[in-house]
Length: 160
Image (cartoon, rainbow, N blue to C red; front, side, top):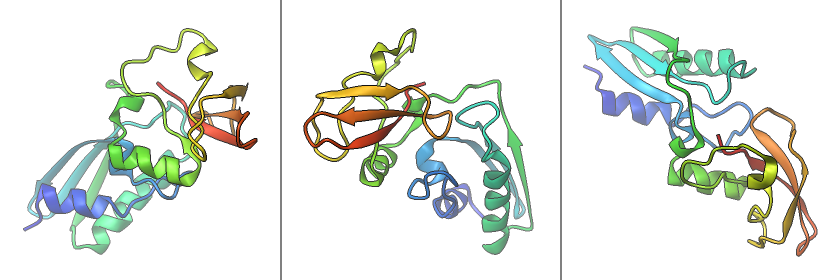
């Protein structure tokens, strides 16, 4: 008989397609896991409405759980409960840093203007002498910054 704990452990294998060092569990998009006689129902909330990786994530969840012995897997998407960057685990924040992305600040950060994206700690050297170069990165969830100390460009996972 499958357990919720087992399912969550297997979901650690499922990585974000855009940030392959970050599991969907550490990303904080897994809302609920229900197990009933080896039939699994997962509810997820994407980081952004219209996330282009949503279908890939859904299929990866199904494939991984079926590989481990689930008889059937249903993945529902919930937009009623919005995802926030506070849902990132500590391990996820460290994975972002190791990948070269600055994690978003902790706490309820309401982005009312772009000032919250200034002076982001550089994931390479830790300096806060950084500046926002472009609020629009390669994906909706990232912005582009520059460090004045190590002189490296880097991306930040935006606070939401």
